Amino acid sequence: MSMVLVVDDSAVDRQIAVGCVRDAGLDSSAVASGQEAMEYLANNVVDVVLTDLQMPEMDGLELVQQIRQTHSVIPVVLMTGYGSETIAAQALRSGAASYLPKRDLKSELGQTLRNILELAESRKDRLRVYQLMTETESSFCFGFESAERQALINHLQDSLQTMNLADENELVRIGTALTEALTNAVEHGNLELDSELKESMDGSFEALLNERVTQSPYQDRRVHVRFKMNACEAVITIRDEGPGFDPSQLPDPTDPENLLKASGRGMIMIRTFMDEVSFNDHGNEITMTWRKN
View 1 (tube, rainbow, N blue to C red):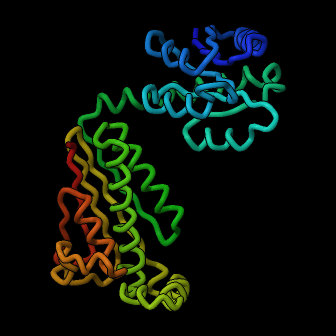
View 2: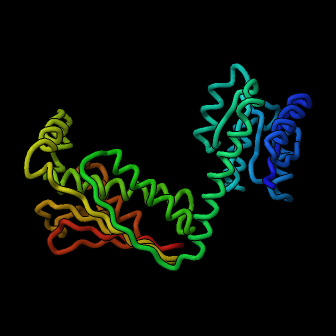
View 3: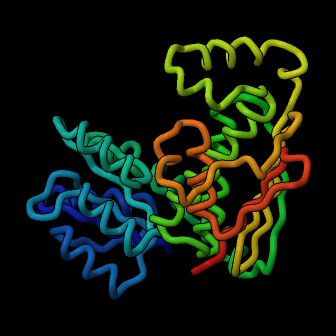
């Protein structure tokens, strides 16, 4: 039976929440503070944490952040009262899985917990698969939509984190490198936009971009991504369908003056953040390697 840890500084509300959990057919324990919750988690198996949002000393937001750092696989569901909407939104952005107004506990808590537990179990299954994995390779293809780019970046970051190839700070650096490389493939590769046009700051770069995504041959071009990962490293290859360029003309990343230029700054960050970067002879394909530290 799944275990739900209830956290609430109010004895009455704590008792009500425990009753709702048990009515849903789940086991439960209860503590009166965020600190007690962290101590309990250090010594017991818990499947879901159900916490009040407004508590003294360590509130629900702080508890979410603490659990995210030390017990990231345990989902947290918030119990909110009137006037706590802003901090509830912050907690959701910090990693809480869901929230419920206290007035709706009796009617909605059971289904909410069952949904969360199902999702959590699915994530645990994925983690088990990653632990068994020795190597994986996948391919992706997209057009010009920035949402598609961001979804792919999020997926690749999640894969790296699940395989324990990078910590939170490293994931940010990898995400920056991926953003720059994918943006270069779209804007400078497929759309053939001059990077120095960005420095004009007169809107001409954006105007030409919006024009070319509706014109041939630009609108038909795609970006192709190959992602290969094992326990030691990840290799990401990004190819566009543009005419390519001469990689030898890239800015020198050791020259401080190049850091101030809009053109080429992305490539400097890619070369700085990734362990190895190379191009094909045609100049329309970049391969970036990240190695586990």
